[in-house]
Amino acid sequence: MNAQPQTRLLGLDLEELTRIAEEAGEPAYRGRQLFEALYRARVSSADQISALPKSFRARMGELGLLVGALGTERKFQSRDGTVRYLLGLEDGETVETVWMPEGDGGEEGDGSDGQERGWRRATICVSSQVGCAVNCQFCLTALLGVRRNLKVGEMVGQVIAVLNDQNVSPPLERVNLVFMGMGEPLLNYENFVKAVRLLVEGVAIPESRMTVSTAGIVPRIYDLGGEAIRPKLAISLTASNDELRSRLMPINRKWNVQKLMLAAREFPLRNREKLTFEYVLLRGTNDSPEHARELAELLRGVRAKVNLIALNPGPGVEFQTPDTPTVVAFQQILISSGIPAFVRRPRGRDIYAACGQLKRMVETST
Image (cartoon, rainbow, N blue to C red):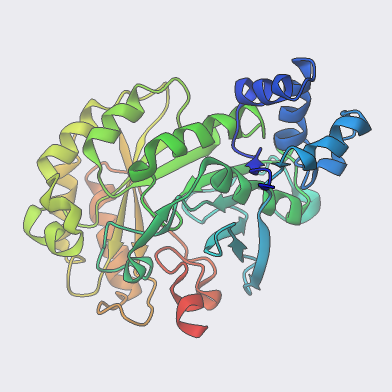
């Protein structure tokens, strides 16, 4: 006798859940009950879906219907309050997700929520792939290569696992999402876009509090601009000319700086929205005043801001972190050119949770 194939519900939208309910002989409104339980109540098992009759809950196991919640395999706590989660996937792979209370240090907080918890806002850094295919030379994740794309439920499941562990419920509390973890989100485009919709419509995190970072997948930047529901866009730039960027970010050989900047200039921004350009500063490589002036000229006329990130070091990366005066001087050149520039305060460096550090240290220590 063949075993019943399993269906993981997390990652399915309302239409798909309604169809599953109807195929199980249940009324269509059970789909809405499943949707609310998965994304708003954030249940981890069918037994917790109290809105469903006991008879249907009992049959869900027989029908192979599983919630599909992610389990935490390891959890690392930083001195600064950052938490790095190693979450287990159904095939034995793992993915990393980061919780950063008080935001990511790029901008000032607004003081609106979470005061009783000791944080005004918090940011969850979400991964989109196991590993990464883009091979940026200053990123520890790149040393893994890419293993596979994450499924929709695995991206949404990261957010739900962290919210449940932290006992936080948006939209009552200010939570931002950044798709800046392991992987290149725009190389997993369809799953990423669907995950965003479910996080907005189900988990109730507004799209205005989401940002996606890309190394420069130009055709997908155009696609993203046409989405009805989309996060804000951040572009990892790190160099302002083709020769240097191709060395640091090989993806530039496919879509060069000119093509990338054309896509950026044509990206349809909403009212008061700005593009973010991320620039990782590498000592003696891209951090000179000349590089800053070149960057300022490249961004002239673009409605944008720049997040400067002093390299977060790690084994296997050949570059070094610039000193503080160099970083400040670079920032001041941009500001004097009329470009808002922020120095991103590193979060979770002591637990390898900072930008560009995810996954590798767990791989090398096991």
